[in-house]
Length: 148
Ligand SMILES: [Zn+2]
Image (cartoon, rainbow, N blue to C red; front, side, top):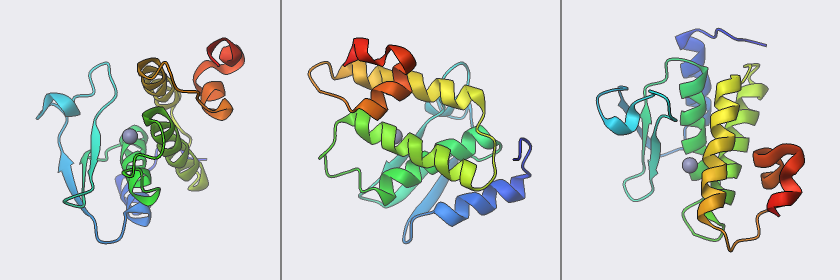
């Protein structure tokens, strides 16, 4: 399992997951507040109309995860609004985490921690929705029943 994949390896993995017919637009951290990685999750976005994935440039495992998360939204057709936002974000995170592991990458602990916080924020924003057990377990661990 890899902790220090080369840029070449990171880009190879990214290419394997890039949706067909979509284009990537890379952003540098700091160039736009949304893409800053200072103390918060860096930003990515799948523009379904223009078929463009906007993502912070892939420089490490964390930013690879952000890119894979956006690819997941496309592959899983998360634009039709059939799921709650929290469920969409959860599924995209599971895709990104599983994809990294399938390629032999050790998912950084900070990525997992940020992921739980990120989905937790979506859960908090949707108080009237009954969230799935796997989602609640991922966000709250053993205390998930308190949030069901
Ligand atoms: Zn997302």
